[in-house]
Length: 364
Image (cartoon, rainbow, N blue to C red; front, side):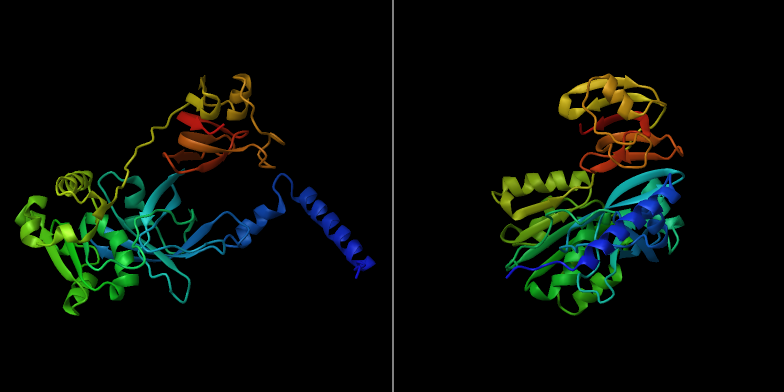
C-alpha cells in the first residue's frame, strides 16, 4: 500500500532548515553547535569528552581520576586503555592511560589511574593540579591486553609501578572468574604499591596469591628467581606490564623456556614532542616533505607543495580541511594553542588555521 506523506511534514522540515540557516547566520563566525558545546559538552553528537568528577589519591605519587564520559562513550573491555587530551599551560597534550574501573558501574563513570613521573608534564598535572569539574577530551577504548574467554585455568600477572593499572582493571571485573591467580608486583616501598590495600584484601579473601617485591629493601626483581617464587610459571597464562627492562627480560625468559605464546605484554610509550616556530612538515600519503614557517597555514603549505588538500571556507569554520596529525606539533593561528600527537594518536586538526610548531607528519 502506498504511503502519502502529510503536507505539513514537508512544511515543518522546510521551516526547521530555514531556522537552522538563520541561526548559523546570526552566530557567525561560530556555528550553533559551538554554543551547544559550551552548554552541553558531553552530548552524544559532540566530540567525545569527559568531566573529571573526583581525584582520589592512591599513593604519594598516584591518583585515580573518576570521569563521567560523554554520551558517545561505547564502553571498554577490562585491560584496555583510553587516550586523554588535557590542556596544560595552553598546550593540548594527549596521553594514554589504562582503565581501572568496573564495566558495570551503575552511574556509568569510568576511571583511570595516573602515576606522576619526574618531569612528566601531563602526569604531574593530573595527579597534583587538576580539579574536579575539569573537562577533558577522550578517545574510545583501545588495546588487546585483555583476558580471553573462556578464562585461563591458571593466571600470572607480573607488574611493576603503574604497570598494575591494567591488571587491576582485569581483577576488579573478573577475579571471581579466575580459579588460580598469582600477582607478582614490584614497587620501591609498601606505601608505593598502587591499589596496595585492595590487592591485599583480595589476597586475604583467598581470591589470589600476592607477592610484593619492595625494591628499596629487597633490590630489583630478577626473573631468574621465578622458579622459586612461582614454580609452575611456565604453565600459567601470563600478563606483564611495567618498565621496558622488565618486559624485555620477560620476553627473553618466556622464549628461552619455549612458551612465548603464554606471555602477553603491555608497553607504555613515553615520548617527548619538541615544539617551536615552524619545522619540517611531511605529508605521508604523498611522500612529500617541505620546510614550513610558523605563520603559514598547513593548508597553504601543502597546496604550494602540490599536495591535494581538502578545504572549504579556509577560515576555520566549516571543518572541511580537517586531517589527521600523525606525529608532531601544530599551533592554532587563532589563539596560539599547541596541539601535539604521538604515533598512533590519530589527532584531527584544521589545516587552514594550523601552522607547524615543530616537525610534524600529516596523513595526506
